[in-house]
Length: 55
Image (cartoon, rainbow, N blue to C red; front, side, top):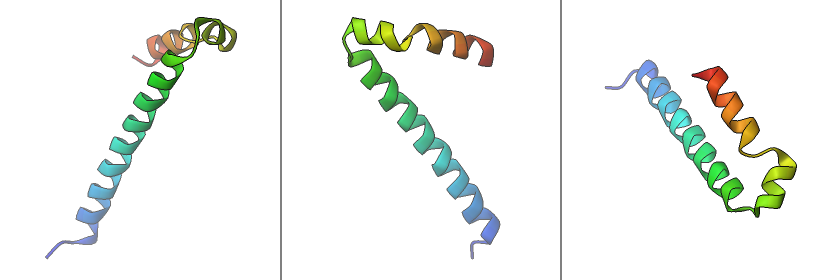
């Protein structure tokens, strides 16, 4: 009933959802760090600059 193309498409979509979920989880973790650590690693300054270039 299903062709391999359908499975490939679903797997690709699921992979994108997993990537998005991982990015959100990472952002939450970084936002939960103390401000001094965020400053040391350049968060959120580097993140904001990277998003501006992407969007």
